[in-house]
Amino acid sequence: GSSFHRLKLPLSKLETTFTNELTEELFSRYDSVWFHYTTNIHPTQLSLWRLKYGTQIVMDIDDTWNIPLNHPSYKAVSENAKKSKLFAIIADWVVCSTPEVEKMVKSYNENTIVVPNRIPYGEGQFHVVNESLESFMNRKIRIGFCGSLSHIEDWLSIQGKMKRILQDMEVKAKCEFVVCGYPTNIVLTAKMKEQAKVYARQKGLPLDKVEETMLKQHIKNNKGMWDKIVGVLGKPKIFNNRPPENYIDLYREIDILLCPLVNNDLNHKKSGLKIWEAACTNTLCILGNMYKDIEEQSTVYLFEDWYNNIRFLIKNKEELYRMKMQTSEYLRSMSDYDKQCVYPRQEILGKKRDIDLNIW
Image (tube, rainbow, N blue to C red; front, top):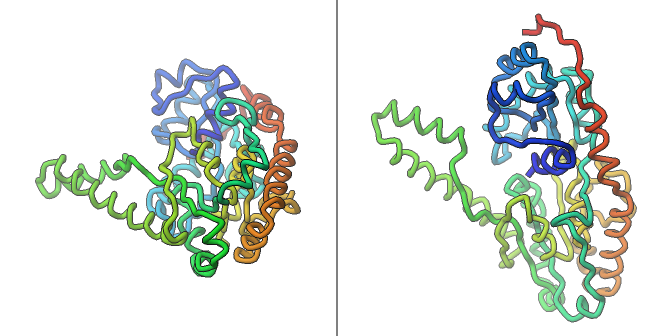
């Protein structure tokens, strides 16, 4: 998800080769190597290759290194954060998604720029389809969540508020609830596979049996968390997750997107990409108050007060349609993808910095 927006989309407009695994042979062939957050090569090795071949290294980061303890990926992300800091030190440039992320990185590397997350409206999957008012008025209003398991604490934070909404008779008559992003193919991560190998060796067990047991537990844990998320919206329709190449269609299943954010460092440094995604599909967002800190144009949104906002919108369906269209059109008018996301990256191509060889 993140690397799709931070690397694949913008760099595909430049002459770029994409790979999931970096090797010395590959590194030596290019003038510039970009990666998101971390890579499969150790920072020390990467810095030696940099000296050997003179290749520019650009690191991209769009999240905090300080992950909350209750985050589903806390263990893995925390371990990667240690490596990520070292990558920030050796990189020629670090591209950050927000000023808050940039402040975090500055003490590791002065060569930082902020390149926001935006959507290339009208290109590929991001085509805009405007539903007619007549069509909208003749169907139910769809309210829900869209995203990955990383939002679980945010979504669970409004569980109490949603109980009142779900019991409202008018809401029941006029609305349906949806959850978009439910996983269909849960697999072991590379880290889990490494742990399975170690455990199998220590216990003298067949590796395939250990991996099978781990996978069952992993699926059970994921299902348990998703069941909690689904429960927040009662008995919603469920739409399975999609690959990055066509994920935006999930937003087309929602009229009112609920975007709560708990107050923590992770959310404080977020870029607010979700509201730009929603603008592609004329989806109106009700936002958590934390969004006031991460987006400047806050006057076109509704904030929290979940019950009253939802009640107002369903009682005034034509106004909901107008707000959906107006907010989305406004956001799209604020976005110039090439200017905001491509050209700034192009500007730093080939620009290197002197690195102290004694940093290690």
